[in-house]
Length: 255
Image 1 (cartoon, one colour):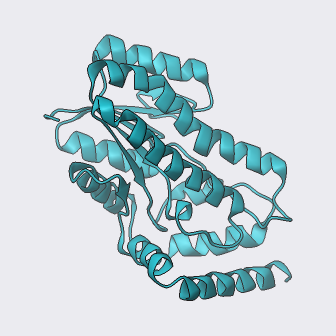
Image 2 (cartoon, helix red, strand yellow):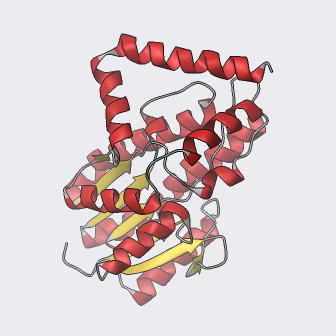
C-alpha cells in the first residue's frame, strides 16, 4: 500500500491504541481514533452494531475506503475457574472477542469491494501461552488469534491481509480497569505490568514494523517471543513453568 494509509483504530484514545494512533500519524497516515472515552475522534462502543455502522458510514463518506482496521479495544480480566463468575466471562467475551468479530464483519464488505486492506487484531501472548488464573482472558485472546488466522485464509483471494498481535506484559493503564472477583489474580498481574520493561510506544512501533513485513502473527517484544518459543520447543519445561506459577497463585489466594 502507498502512504498515506487510511486507518481506523478502536480503543484509540489511550494506551496501546493511542500509541498506535500517534505512530501512524507520525509517518503521515490518516487516522480515525475511535473510543468510548473523551479524546476520541469518533465515539465507538465495540459492543454496539449501531456504533460500528456509524463508523463505517463515516469512513465511506470522508475517505471512500479503508486501508487498515486495527481492532485494539479491549479490557483486562481473569480469575481461577472456580472463582470467576459467568458475568465476568460474558463481559470480557463481548468486548475482547465479539468486538473484534463485529468490527471485522462491518468492514469486510468494503475491503472486498476495493480488493485490498489489512485487518490488525490486537490479541495477547495470552492467546498463545496460557497462564493459570486467566481462563477467560486466555480463552478470548486465543479466540482472536484463531479468528484472525481464519480470516487470513478466507480473505486472501481479495488481497486482504490479517495479522494477530500477541504482546507480553507491557506498561499500560488497562490493568487499572481490570474487573473480577479473584483479587489474587489482579495482584499478580498488576505487579507484572508495573515491572514490564516496555511501554505502549515500544509495542506500537513493533506492531507497525511487523505489519510492514507482512507478518500474520506479530510477537512484538522479546518476552513474548521467548515464551512462545519455549512452548513450541520444550513443552515439558513450559508446563513446569506454568504449574509453578499456578501454585504461587493458589497459595496467594489462600492467604
